Image (cartoon, rainbow, N blue to C red; front, side, top):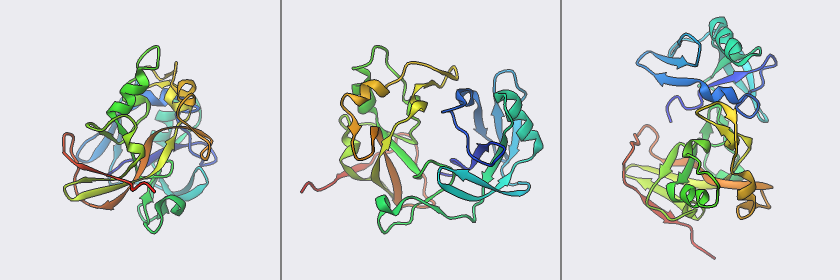
Length: 243
């Protein structure tokens, strides 16, 4: 998706930081304008980040990948450092860099990412959240799981057995269950650690091969680079053949 995970916060060593260690990051709200991205956070003046301007080339590390990036300047660095309480810098992914998803999961398809954990898209079914919420003392919003695409019209956890989702001229392949981490315990409205779903998911969604609980599916683009997806669009789910 255009501009998705194009920016990232890094520490003094150039290593990525996330809501896992800084839950207040959830309070930073970006809005894309024609020429810039406007960032707002409680108690802070708005920060305008140009969409077509970068500063010094740097390297940034996300998980096991060290990739080319661009530093976004001292003003952005000071803004985030002040709000989050530790020295940080904002970097932008170098579009000339090719960072690919694991071929173990994508097979022959070269699926490019920016600063996402490992795949370009994350898909979750609305009914899956409803089923999970029926097991929790208090329901959680879908924002706890931060999917790019939320699908309606499928039964709970149907995304686990869907091979492809086809929307007009766009086809997505669901390739890997998404292992969930402590970020699902961050209240996205408050920017604080709160009750979360991990212990409940362990009871019925533990994946021994991945050594963790799963919710949603990582997806790659098979067809439709440059096409547009919109909320409310209809599609077809193609299921994997069993056996």
